[in-house]
Image 1 (cartoon, rainbow, N blue to C red):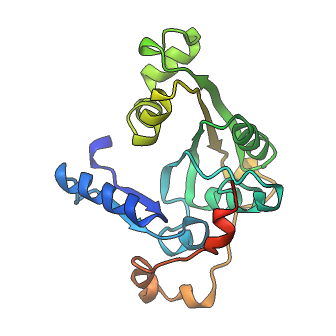
Image 2: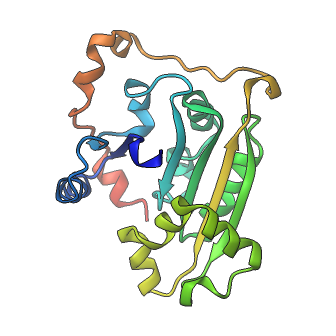
Length: 217
């Protein structure tokens, strides 16, 4: 039953976390949905175990346009190996963006990673009920409520729709270990290896170099 499954949202921006928490409370969904302020690129191993999750969603991540900052993109070869570790076999990774260059990066990075294959990708335009999409794309939207939700009902998706910009979507599927040349693994630092410390990082504030972020346009 999809309504009984747990959802964990990780977000580094404090204002976004507070907004999401208010929405969760207003809908009385605290028993199955949580939103935590943290840096998922660093602290994901503190929250999850191997093959624990079915779906991962990356909605409108920072494109980091400058080449020197490509390493900071949340979809990368190294991080895909980490995501593969936490995803169940045949689990799905969703990535949506309104930046075409970043969508190409997502496609190329997932396509070249041995743990994933491209399950579906498309460009969605916000016309009436997506009638301008191909029959295959419309059918996929009808069959996948998660995809419809992230391209239509999130606050960022609504902002993109108001600007009449397209949304680029990628869904990659995690291959089972017996189809891989290696088994995904991760190294957790000694400071996070103690199970008793798993809860200590939940409310930890994570800071970036603000000056470098402001210049990353």
